[in-house]
Amino acid sequence: MEPSELSSQLRKPTGETGKEIGKALNESNQKLYELAFEMMELRENDTVLEVGFGNGIHFPEYFRIQPRLSIAGVDFSKEMCEEAKAHNPKLIASQKLSLHCEETSALPFPDDRFDLAVALNVIYFLDPPEIHLREIRRVLKPNGQFLIGYRPRHAVEHLEFTKQNFILYERDELESLFKENGFGIIEDTTRTYEKLSLDKSRVTVTDACLLVQKV
Image (cartoon, rainbow, N blue to C red; front, side):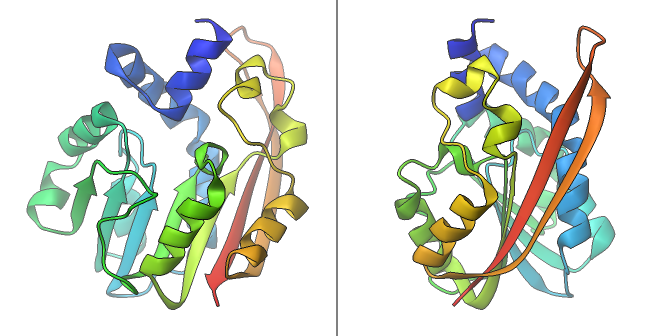
């Protein structure tokens, strides 16, 4: 796959190729999700919004941490919404999980709805970011938290597919962006590790999670 096509598919998985991309992302994002779940302090009856949930195979993990939650997911890829619905029929039927095929620039929720918002490997595609951050802040409760998973610029800028459709950030840039848009910084955690790539070579991966709060 050409880097430009991969870049477009990562931004918005589409068609059968997009479904395959969704499966590949399950593996590549696994440790980032593990880091994110470590940082979450989920409480009984919390309301959670996940932005850009992909094919949704991870949703049951929220409920293993805290069984009494209400989760809404938003993703603008029709294919990912269909896949996530197919992977989570019981959670949807029990009304613990609702999925919405929508843009984050106009969220279909009232003000002050959620205790926590989560977006993993999504921040690069929010363009311009201010519009999307304003909407996410609007639907968070007072003092609600937002957990952003990302890979810093220095860790991924050498990859050809990040040269299109991606807005890359270093930690200080991301923190400044959130401070300028009504959030206070709580915590930023980074984890670096090695893994085998598809060609069996060893590559270094840097995962980071930024936890902020509506102020």
